[in-house]
Length: 165
Image (tube, rainbow, N blue to C red; front, side):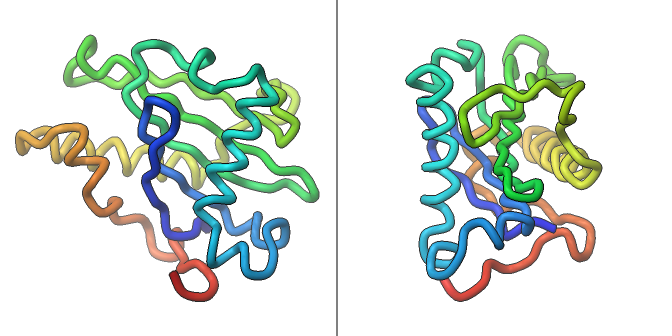
């Protein structure tokens, strides 16, 4: 299950953030409901700075947007970055996707060692892409897609954040 997603600017690329409920034990107390967005973004920025000072140099120049999944496995925190690229280049079959996972120490995770992208994550990414394409078919822009409410997900996939925002 994921907490209600949000969109935030991330370096030069917008980022759609999904936070798995597995992090609820990691980000405790007031942080989980009052500053959860900041916690997620700060985590990604911290990973980026640990990984080399800035996430931007590690993003391909043709990045259009990112779908990020913040999750925990036991005591370890991770972020999967689904880097969505080349919308203009590949037209109807776009985007091309580059998937990388970082741990909290800023180290890129070897997918053969840890894996990345659980089944729920792949369903969410697929629903996001179906939604983006449906809006594009209506003449809507990428910005319209990013500004729109997030797409419908299977029942039980999205849960409210604890507390109130």
